[in-house]
Image (cartoon, rainbow, N blue to C red; front, side, top):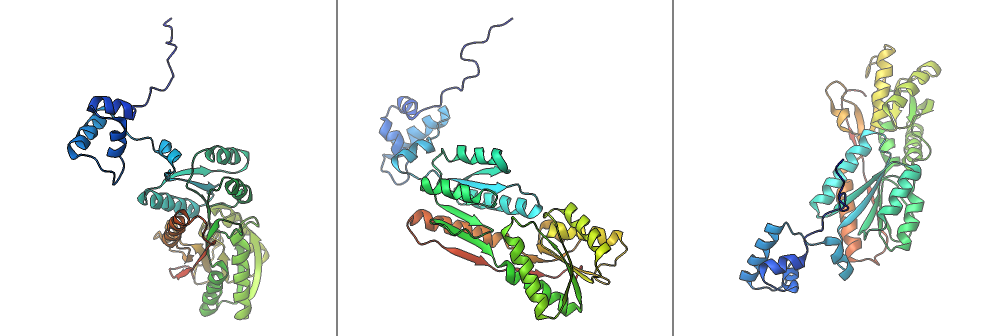
Length: 337
């Protein structure tokens, strides 16, 4: 049996600036200047250094540079469980936006002890910031980041804490737009498939719908909570069909609305003719020709722009006053209302 070398499994040593300096015949400081934007260095010497670096496969150690006060450009993103398509689309767009801005996101997903341990581990690195896309561990994460002087940007819910900037949709006003559309369509009895109580948007969207129904003197015909998944929307709507008489149904997100469409069709309801269905978020699936869901657009591009602006502002001015950016939803008319 072949014996394994004592070095087997060990990581090969990284090419260093000293290796490049030796090959190029320059000093270690010259190599550093060659990779520092704006630093003066003779052009011929710079070209020798870059050629040697290319041949050796050398790249400067970005984390080492943070020891001299440089930014790491590492940004942690706590995405939570991402239980529906909007969460996935928003997180994907945020990652792409951070990359385009020269930031390198470290994404943590999930919940409970595993996510908590992952957050603890990632905070050992010199993060420029933490972005919260989920609220399941928000308080714990904010407390840890505060002790480490790591700025936090909360996207999707408002967290009132020092050095925490917030980007949030005006959920209440958005849900009132749904009530306006039900009234315009002539609906009288509206059912609600809401979300779980541990999501900040759930109560805001529910209260907005109720205020809108009151404004138009419409009736809340029934209400059942889902968990923001398509399956939960399907079964919630089945129960509503058994318990309530309604001609419109508002779902607190598109995934549940798509499930509701399936349950209504299985029950023989004619969508738009018998029953209006309005969702929330405007996920990609809502635009499919076989679905064409009327919904409220939760603007992902605007969210990413706001996060990046808050991030730049906070990095340039660490002691700046906390900022809250409120985004507006847009009603998207398709075929289900």
